[in-house]
Length: 606
Ligand SMILES: Cc1cc2nc3c(=O)[nH]c(=O)nc-3n(C[C@H](O)[C@H](O)[C@H](O)COP(=O)(O)OP(=O)(O)OC[C@H]3O[C@@H](n4cnc5c(N)ncnc54)[C@H](O)[C@@H]3O)c2cc1C
Image (cartoon, rainbow, N blue to C red; front, top):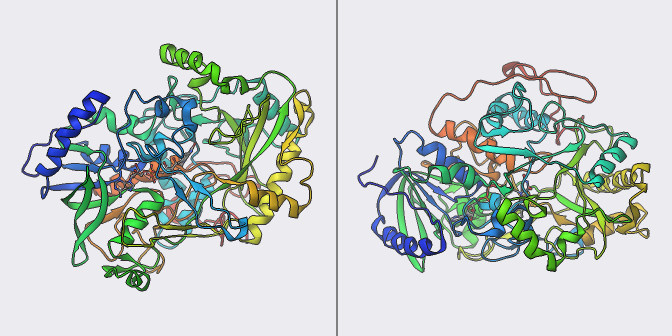
């Protein structure tokens, strides 16, 4: 412990917030110059896990600096699952990024929401919980120096964090007592049942648990919703431990620079309530997410030295991989009108909001208690891939993610897109002003593989939605509509209409120092060529996984906590998992694992 006693601070209510904010402002001054064992930059998804795990035994002092505000329990927009469309695009919760004009998307800028609030993106996300396919981690582990991140090594950490309520107590592939309580989507709406049946008619099987033995197939999804309320990373990890005397959380604290002595990070500068502060840390841990973390590294002199020089930034360490290797998922909505009055469309009518809201407030039930993403599936779109390259979310309503353009009548839709495109982009600061947003280039649709899978994705979706099981509901395709048929028409529509699925990642990838594009050491999470500095968030992923990425980020943070504390990692668990070609029914012991799924791109057999 360092020399002060640390009364933990979390803003809990509007009145309290005002009071505590004042106190915090004083404290921020009071603690200027104080040294913590760990300074965590970003109280988001990964940051919440680390705040808990690093402070758990009481021997280390931990400070979390979060640029956004607190995740107030009274804030319906982030607590009520169905309100998920509201925070995106709202400056009180969202960094509101935009891509540069995307060359293959007619120069369109793509909006990118990122959580700016305690809990980070987990406080504003869609609450869908997808581990990704085991072969995703076999791919991670197949890269030189990455053996300790293969499936057998990651599985124990998925289990550590989960409490998967829908899985049997003796299911050895799922966790049963972790902080992240997962409820399975009930998927009771008749449209879900029809959709699962239609998938089967199209030749795609049901699966019991997409996070268990078999991902491939269709079924209900796990969600970060518990008892009708969003269970963010902050609610799961941070809030239960907020009274720990050695854990301190400062909200509205925007970190602008990492300060170095030589190549050793010793403190960070941050702005709070218009004032500048500096706080020292024996370790600085960056958890700002896949856009802000590389941007902060670059602002602080860690990145491509030649590029930083052009901005007048002195290089601390020349690491050309910082901000490169950006990966994401792009998605479209295939929408249909529904001939029967069974969709969720009525719950979108403004006049119903008060009743729906009241029902949720009083009983945590009703249309507001669900994220609506209750089921979907995973498909291989061609025989060249070893595991699913498409993810489907089915929604019993026709609406865009941001709540805009809801169909006026009953409808339904699937969200669909390729899951491991080989297009790569970058995050680059454009100025030395930390408030100026970095340049984001995704290069969506820029490769032959990506375009091929897009065409396959749309055709497979249409095939499923055109099956007999949907006929009783099918009022015709609303989007893209019958005029879009040829490959070119499909690609043009995707270019015009697609949105991000909000999974930017991999911009400070793990890998050994011998890899010139690696940024983070996979054995310690330290930034290569520096001391006292680590990265733990979506940036550290080497490849995006084949589903939503919150669960992988949380797993990564759980494992990172042990690495940072220098604890022996959880023992690797060898486990069977489904492979469609039956080539290798069980995961081989890690040390000798011949990772056949890894190739030049995710799961593609070479
Ligand atoms: C709208 C939306 C919907 C999504 N839906 C899903 C979904 O349904 N399922 C799923 O699996 N994934 C989903 N995702 C993706 C997933 O939530 C994120 O990939 C994941 O939470 C990222 O975790 P992280 O720890 O890397 O970053 P974050 O959780 O974003 O945390 C970063 C934190 O750092 C803070 N921060 C950043 N810079 C600074 C700074 N300089 N100083 C201080 N603090 C800073 C931020 O304010 C933020 O709180 C969604 C994302 C969004 C935005």
